[in-house]
Image (cartoon, rainbow, N blue to C red):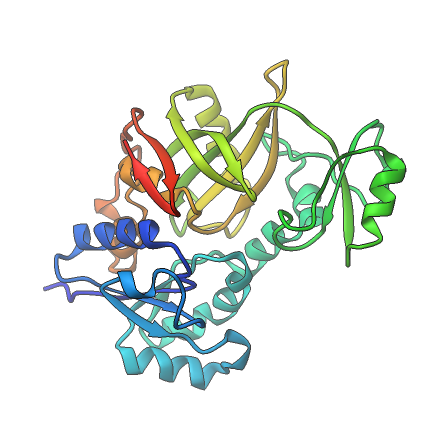
Length: 319
């Protein structure tokens, strides 16, 4: 008989909608599944709204023994990271946790590093079915008139400089720690979400237009159907070795309908409740995989193409 999992949802912050969808997915797997929301801030916005909450020690204070003790005290069997800044920590500790009966939905450390380093990402993915935006260290390496300047590592939304000429881009870079430059591309953006098994194969694909973006996150998003783009996104995800679990990508569509890959996030995202609601059952499939029940995971699951998401007061409303 399958034992009910106890899942740690890390970096809870204000992600109540995502927490609820993850819990829903976990209970598709087992009706008594428990989802423990955690955050280093005990007063984070979602702490009082979830079924179970625990304060998480800052990750930079946890050695392996401390991490194992924390998980053992709560009876944790699975971990689902939800923030870029913690992915390297969980990837580094994935094998140790697995040896002690805790499975983490995280990609390999190499894949995480590639996704977080924009220059490394460009260099490794430039032959992908959907190629990444050209990324360089100096503006004179690009044959462009307008530029984007951003940090090489981590999230770019707070420090990014958009639609700059060469001098403005160079000046903006003086305030960055490790700047990189990209050509300024204009056009609508979409996200692609999938779940990737331990062999690196995609199961399901949800494409959604990012119709309203606030601080880099989609606050309005609508699913659409385009099989050719789905196929190209599947090939692109599968071309990155070590990528596994839930993953999402952002893509810009130019006027000539050419596609440029902005980034891949090796985790659930702020608008992922839409994909999870559309029958991309990433959480259930992750749990099935950890129980060696891969035969129950559909190769080509059918997803709902008729949903849209709006964020109101921080909560995702799906219709």
